[in-house]
Length: 560
View (cartoon, rainbow, N blue to C red):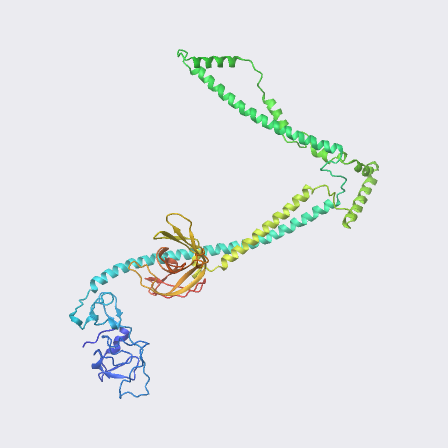
């Protein structure tokens, strides 16, 4: 029987030696006559003497210990019974070489999906013949492979774009954090200035000799001034409304007069319409009537001046009367004796009074100000400045926390999922649409209306070993370690746990959901394609699924 060829790494061991013997690959101490290679009997404990038959297909790690090869081999020799060959080697000329499981060799079935050259049925068991089909199968494979490689190359290009976007977003977060730190320092200075200003204002207020409720006007004149001011304001407001109403009515009258004037000019005198004639006649009488309802621009200016707010330059300066000592209580007049003193002595007495009052206030003997009088406008403005500064400082500190949390968050390998945050994809399945938002939420949306169901909120990354087939269009998880996004703490499931979703990621040109399933009650599984997990192979011309540890900057690749 001819020796069935293997790949270059193995084929060299199947050349006859000078002594026409074959050495078992995993047991170099055991040699057999070369004629017993591929004789459909398993001589080597590792099965290496039967590369072209299924005689050693029974060997597995679960097999019982094998017999000793014979008296020619010392009993002390250790036996390695692990299967030495990966399977039956199919050369598949015109296509891709591959290995077939030994138990499928000469089983009476053409395994074209692995051995397109039909070499696995060389024995013709049951009279079956498997003519080679590698030419057409290889042609179609290369066509599909070209399509897949173009898609995967595009996916790698898209991944590079995502990496660039993620790097920019991280830089922006770092800049925002630096700006927030600077804003905090500036806000602290601003707050300190505002507090210092408030203390100064309150100190000045304490030194002020309060002789009565100045703003309230406790004397008769003060009460009268306040009442007069309120009355004037009411009249001004009513006058403003009346003027606005007048202007509106005037505009309407002018509009109606214009309509009637056009009617008079445009109507046909020969047209016998009593209504039109009556309207024209009424207009002529109206227009000829002498009225005194006109007002001049000067009168309008006077009216505007009357309605203007009172100030020290126009109208009545109410502040002058309200702040006048004459508006104070009668008791306050008792403290005006210094006005009868000579100017030099007057200033000296006033200074001593202020100092003495300051001493009494500081020691708690006198109140800081009249309790019946509200805070002055200066104090209110100073406190407002402090409040504003405190809010600015609080907002800046919140921005620091937000930016720091963003920089510390796990965005996957090299932080690439930063560029996909809150990007959502949709998948129709049965009565529902399933939505995945990267690093956001997973949802189940009824097509016929109703509330959405949250299937989980993103909590972090994980990895999972998969062993699944990839469809002809390249959509599938394949084999190896894959990145997983964990979504937990979704809506509570009736008589069950809170909903959760494991999102298994594999390489694809576009972000898309391939499959949604419910592995157990309210525990979902999504198979998702994204260019974010694609990796180039060593030759640089192909791309494959890959995975990394779920932390930025620590790649760990496992190519298909």
